[in-house]
Image 1 (spheres, rainbow, N blue to C red):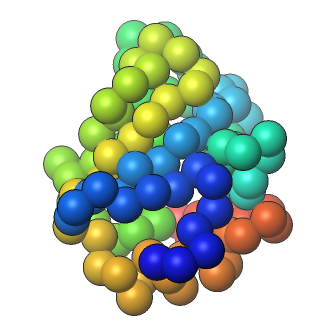
Image 2: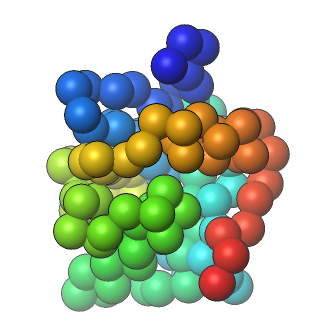
Length: 109
């Protein structure tokens, strides 16, 4: 994917996202690019892995992959995370990127 945003890279068959999580938000949504990372709002609190589970579900739903294909590679105890997503369809990813690039998008429930 040419001209990928700074928070996204592809390593083999995996997407690697650099994400900053805002817990305890009013709804789960992808906020867009902020300061070189993908900002994400989650209703879950940062307690006992709840926010980590929520961010995993959010990206699985947004990219139409199983939750088992989404994992937190770094930052399980931090707001700043590196998320790896295996097996995401290239066309779906490009359509998704076009929808969130630099603007706020809510993820459908």
